[in-house]
Image (cartoon, rainbow, N blue to C red; front, side, top):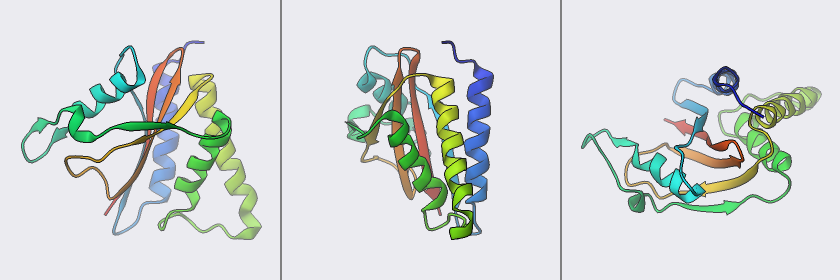
Length: 162
C-alpha cells in the first residue's frame, strides 16, 4: 500500500478542521500528522524529529537527549488506541465543543471517521505514546503518538497553546 502526499494532506486538513472547532479566544489547538524522518528505529526517527525543532530564543535545536524521549506501546488494537486519543482531543478537553447526549452519535461518527481515515492512509500500524520533557517551550498541553507501519513512521501531535 502506498500513501500519497495528497492523502496525508487531506488527513491533516481534517485534523486542522477539528482543531479549529476547538479553537478559542484564549487558546490555539494544533492537531497534525507529521511524517518522521527515515531512521532504522522508531527511537532514531523520534530523535531526528525532535532535534529538528529550533529553540526560538537561541535559534538553535537541542540534542535529542535534552528532550528525554521515551515511548510506551498503547493498549488495545491500533483502532481502539487511536479512538481513545482522538475522542479525548476532539471532545474531552477544556476547550472541546459540548454536543450533549442527544448528539452522542455525532461524536462517535466523527471519531470513527478520523480513525478509519488514519488507518486507510497509513495501513496496519503499531501505536506508541511518546513522552518527552522538552528543553524549550513546546505546548501548554500536548500528546504525541508514534504511528509505525511497513510504509514509514509518523507523529500524531495534539496540542493546546494559551
